[in-house]
Length: 262
Image (cartoon, rainbow, N blue to C red; front, side, top):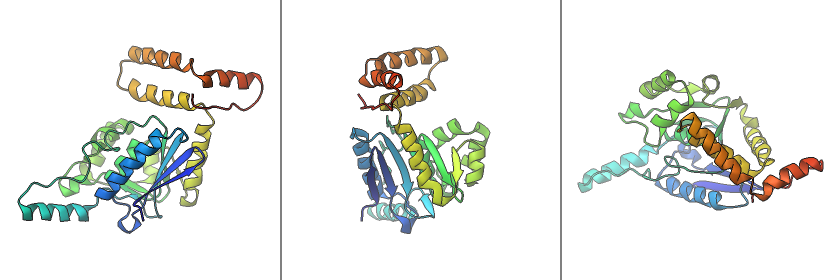
């Protein structure tokens, strides 16, 4: 069975990490498959929103597969060559530029690369038993898929440093308190909540949703006045779309808009 599952439900793609026997840890096969899945849903015009989750009730993702890493290191030493990580240099985690909204449904442990996967997503919903953290320092390493850069952008800097330097895990409730996740729900409500949110997003014009995401992310890297100009540029482009005419027309006709994504 594939280690990465992709299910399409109307305009939603559900990408599931499917290695429950290894707490959905990422091995070389999983990195390859999730990269292919990411490209596929990104390029699919029928997909407007993505949900990323894991199989089972124990782990969203436990990070890099340490057993595979140890085996590869042993093989490299035996052959007298340097060890090469299975994490791709250009991966969907570190350099993910996904224009479509992505929701993480965190169904358990999100550790190391697992939390980095969740940080790549735009919105995070956690099951109430989930625990999150970056434990790489415990193996005398640091996060290698963007964790040192993204975590301080989501939570207060001092708290990010504490998590990075201690390797401690935080509960789902604490993650919500510090702004690391958007909401916490019982496990039985996790996927329904994620799908309901995806459906709410999909009621809007998809081009506008993507433009809002792009404006927010790129604006974070700009001076405020530059951000205003970029926002205006995106808005002027949106006004040329069919959907931008459909929205006001549907409002005037007192009906639900029929957006096409063009």
